[in-house]
Image 1 (cartoon, one colour):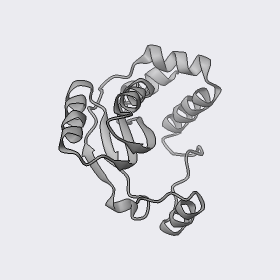
Image 2 (cartoon, one colour; image 1 turned 90 degrees about the horizontal axis):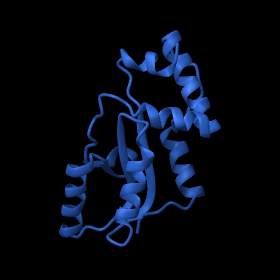
Image 3 (spheres, one colour; image 1 turned 60 degrees about the horizontal axis):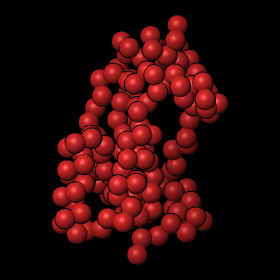
Length: 152
């Protein structure tokens, strides 16, 4: 049984998050379309940023892009992660782009491992694989301090 069969009739969703330090008019198109391209394998794709221009025209442009292409936007608060805000929700894709998924599995050993882990977890109906660690509040604060991730 392959990943297509495993995901076809299951209630699982795959999410893609493209993380950026700062997003503004000068880099919006590059970052937005990079997020769009890198999220073809997922049901939902998000552009996540620590800093963002607050200009109303910039927010209107984000809204227009979201309406046209469906990529969500999250304003991340690295100090109080619970205070992070989803500014625009991602459009939910009912079906994945299997051509892209298959190409990534063939071309990217890390993605192939990720896909294999997902298939195994779905088949045993339990998360047994190692994915990104979910940090406790204290570990997150240490990480933010160590990496010097601050919002001015």
